[in-house]
Every structure is written in structure tokens, then in C-alpha cells.
Amino acid sequence: MTDTTLRHEPSHSQPLIDAHHHFWALDGQVAYPWLEESPVENFFLGDYATIRRPFMATDLKRLVPEGFRLVGSVHCEAEAARSQALEETRWITRQQATHALPSAHVGWAAFGTDECATQLDAQRESPLFRGVRAKPVTAATPQTRQSVVGASGSLQDPRWCEGLALLTEHDLSWDLRVPAWHLEEAAATLADFPGLRVILNHSGLPWDRTPQGLAQWRAGMRELADNPNVAVKLSELGTPWHAWDADANRELLCEVLDIFGVQRCLFASNFPVSGLKVSYGDWLALVTSAIEQTTSADLRQNTLDKVLHDNAIHWYRLPITAIASPTDAAAVTSSTATSITTSTTTFTATHKTPTA
Image: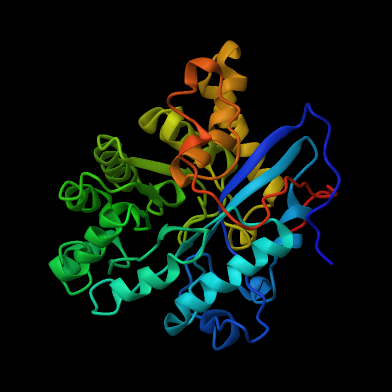
């Protein structure tokens, strides 16, 4: 039995697309060593024992608060065993057929290896496959950043960057995930790939909240924003070194909206990982409050529609109809969406207050 026929919400509810989340069943179909074996030391959000359990489409649907109608989502690779990238993509494709989620999948491929092209070709057989999240080698702290510059697998490694060229060749996107002290390097690397569509993860990961750290984050964000092919996900403001601060995080979201503009900002939850620091409802409220704080009343609904819904359709080419006003139709449209052969039935959760 599928759950693609869940009740529809009233027409006045806000349509929502979650542009970054993870699913895992932990049932042997796909292996996740970081969840099923010994815990990773120094995980960036600390102890993650509470997410070392299955998290599936039904769990995500239950988290969406009243007043919002989840109509689609983007699944991002979840650090499956690296030999099982194709298995994860196929498994996610089966989940969509059963649960109407996700609407698209961002997979993984081994940049810098002879297998990369073959891995991409195999995953392209899935109608959900839109791009790749392959993480370059990064430094653990801003003070040690220089130690990895030019290293194998780094943003300066020509062999590793061949993967970016392959994405461009196949019209696939790159999900960029690096801490803030590598953003300027990422912008420099992307200058060599002007045709590549890039979606920056997690608000640029401003982990270092010192004045110097935030200045470095802002500089990197501005350099990336100068590239019109880069968008950013309003997601994951948990840090390794600072307690959760809703007011400070709202101000950071306001800055991201200002730097990138409303056409290039996508709501994303990073659940269940972000649930270690904040509930789904509270994160969604934080994003919407940042939009309200930075947008005039007459433009507020249009901005909400873009950030919470339409921009994900545009950047991930989702087969979902945009809400955009006629003046925005050329900028944000579903006409570029790639057809999906499995079900894309609109659904919503039976809402409850999230507790994660």
C-alpha cells in the first residue's frame, strides 16, 4: 500500500518544497557506515545518536507544520557506502514510486577517479537524478585552511575538478558543501566552469562566528553570488563551536537573502540531521521570519512563493507547477523540468508539532 493519496490541505496553505533532506532505512538495502557502525568522531553537530535510526518519507511528512503543504522535495546523498552510490540512487527512485517523495535526487560520484564517468552514466538512468554532491578535501578549522590548498581531492586539484567538467557536459548540477573558509576558493574554481549549475549547501556553513570568521564568510558568499549560476540553500546553521542562537541565525539568513537575492535562495531543512539542533517547524518559522524581516509587505507572498517553492523547481528542474506571478514566469518556470515517469502526486502530512 502506498501513501500517495494523503489528504489535501485547504487551498490557502503555503505550498512547500524541501530542497535538501535525507532518507535512510538501515535495513540492509543500502549501507550507511556512519550510522550503522562506530560513530564518527568530531561530528560537526556533536552526539548524533538520536538520528541513528530509520528516517523515511512518512517521517518527513509528519514534521511539516499546519499551514504548509509539502508538494515536493530534493533528496541529497546521505554518505552511503561509497561503493553503493548507484544502489542509493535506485533505492531513492523506488521510494518516490511508493511515497511520492522525493521529486529529485542529488547523488554521489567519485571525482578524481576513472570510475566517475561510469557512475554518472549509471545514475542518469534514474528519472530523479539531477546532480551530484561530491565534497572536496577541506580543512577542519580556518587556521589550517592553507594545509589542504592544492592537495589531492582539493578544489585546486585538476584531476578532481574533472568531475565538475563531467557535470557540465551532462547538464547535471553540483551541490557544493564546504565550510565558510573555503568559499572564496570555491568561487575561484567555479570561474573555470561557467556553464555549471551550482547549489551551495547550508547557507555556506558559517561555523566560525567570530567577527573574523563572519567577515570571511561574507566575503566568500559575495564572491559566489557574483556567479549567476550559483544558488544557495537556506539550511543548517548548527555549528561545531557555538550554541544554537535563533536570533543570530535569523540575522545570518537575512544576510544570505540580501547577498544572493530572492531568486537564488531555496528553503531546505537538512532533516533529520538538523533535528539535532532545531525542530522542523522552528526552522521553517525562522526562514519565513527572515523573509518577513527583509521583504516589504506587498512583495512578501511573492517572495515566500519563490523561496519556499518556485526556486527549487527552477534550480532542480522539478516536474511541479510554479506559483510565480506572470511577471516572474520567464525567470521561474516548470517548463524546464525533466519528466519523471513515476508518480508525482501532490501530498501533505497529517500535521503535528515536530518533536525532533
